[in-house]
Length: 290
Image (cartoon, rainbow, N blue to C red; front, side, top):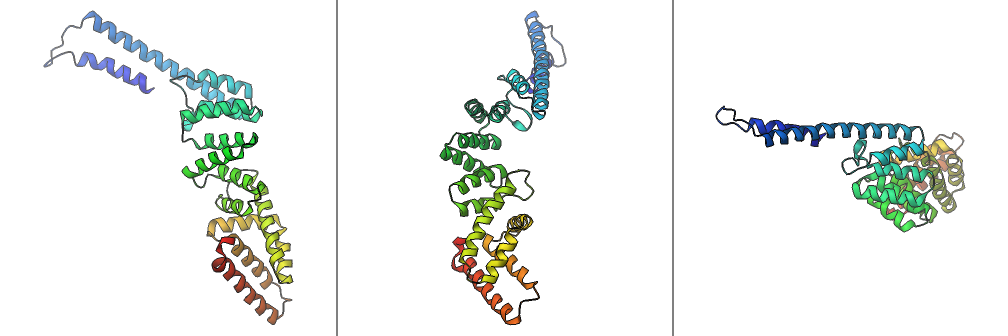
């Protein structure tokens, strides 16, 4: 639309600039023909942009309905030098790659996403999708590079955080996975996030239980860590309060113990002393363990 508007404006500018001191000079036939051609081009461009806009809109509707063949057909037909982007500056090649990815045709998906990356080097979803393709192909180093590139532009981009945390957990880098999870907003719509929180936090809590000397503390930790809702609340508290994982977990354990009327006063005092020791270790003595 910008090109067509400029052409129309230019075509009207020429007659206005052709006269001097309010006198209109006769236009030569060549100039009239030139103006006519400009107007025709502007109208043709307007029609072309409208047609491609309709194709893109229909392509997005087909995408929403999981009509993969129609999505590819419309997006490919709409893609030209003058029309390469959809809404929110998303390259049309990205939508094509997305379909190939869902079909598990990872080679075609990779080609489409690489094309989209050239068209829009800073498109976060394209970087994340390139990482996912490489991860599916077993090239985790390449996948990590693209996830980290996306996170360098948007540190709280949940899709890249979850995908990178998944790789770290699979490679037994549980503490690295934990740090990535802590940055994911609890309101994320990613369906894999709950399961990832469960396996990563459960693994860390099991390690804490094994190291704990107090049977009462370890027993209570096992009880509350088996509840999915508590794990979700734990992640939310860590994100919102910016509190280390192990410190937040041990606080919840002692809060649970304080609610138990059956604990004698002496035991309660010993537990409080133990809590202070643990919190000191995690916050000051060994902060790298958090």
